[in-house]
Amino acid sequence: VAAGARPDRGLPRPLPRRFFARDTVTVARALLGCLLVHLTPRGVLVGRIVETEAYRGRRDPASHAYRLTARSAIMYGRPGVAYVYLSYGRHRCLNVVTEDGGRPGAVLLRAVEPVGGLVLMRRLAPGVPDARLAAGPGRLARTLGVGLAHNGADLTHPPLYLAAGGPPGRVLTGRRVGVGAAVERRRRFGVAGSRSLSRPFPPVL
DNA sequence: ACTACGATCTACT
DNA sequence: GTAGATCGTAGTG
Image (cartoon, rainbow, N blue to C red; front, side, top):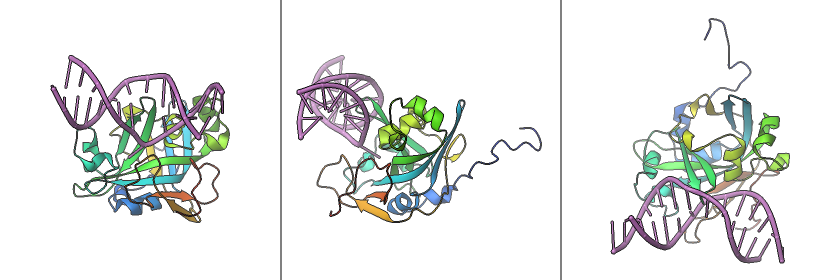
């Protein structure tokens, strides 16, 4: 980069790795209101995180890290790294690894509100209304240009990273989506009033 | 090597 | 409300 050049001027600053080296539920809540930023060759994409889910290991049968396998090994590794997997052979899901000291954990990013790069986002998800462009983990990955190639990417640095945002306002909690009934409740978190939630939070749990 | 199964989304009845 | 798509991962033989 040329001296004096500021290629990231105007862009939010990445969250430090220590942000992610904490309890997974704490990180899942703290990520609400934060920004997901992707500097792609075709443009800058920015979304405000409005929905997350916490997945731990060992004691969490719904977590991919319940057992240590080739795929889940990344959840046992460095916090702040992306864990991207293919769901139902069609959809990619973006997580950020949490915890420290070899403890497994990850937060699934389930929904963001489009903040920047709307024109490109609409191209990536044709026919989807703006508020719904990244409502759901599969749509989020598609609309933000995230693929399996990002598995293992460091989310504390561009081109794909997380950044501080505004306060989330009131936070909703609920049971995780798409997992069996025998698992613990209230590991899904959402920003109340957002029109970009993947689905409503039931009034009573 | 072979099989079963999804942390989902879309389309259609 | 429910079915089908689609393929990497994980478990079994």
